[in-house]
Image (cartoon, rainbow, N blue to C red; front, side, top):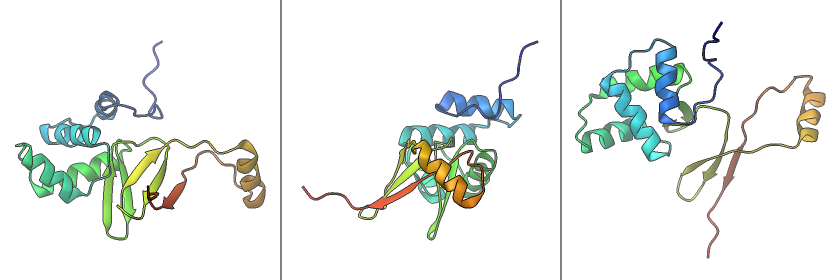
Length: 146
């Protein structure tokens, strides 16, 4: 018996994102594909407005409502990342576990992979009584002056 693709498989490429849509039975409309392609090309966190503007500048006409609806559907299914910020939501291509470096000078958010020492995870578990199954770390800082 062949196993189906687990939904916990990390999304590490545009092809993985498209495959996850198909596995979930999500219609892969032209607009949805445009959004996924843009997020994978940009490799940065963008607002819905930035996504709308960039797609239309590329000649890929898409309405505001379509952008918002597709971003909501893709983030709800864990296909793309949605970050809630005080000034609005930002969307990114990486949906699997990762951490962020937040540059206070440029407002840039950089995705990074961080592995915490096992001793630190055990300490957190001991102090909270919660078995840690996943984590994300947010770092904040400024660019070093040359």
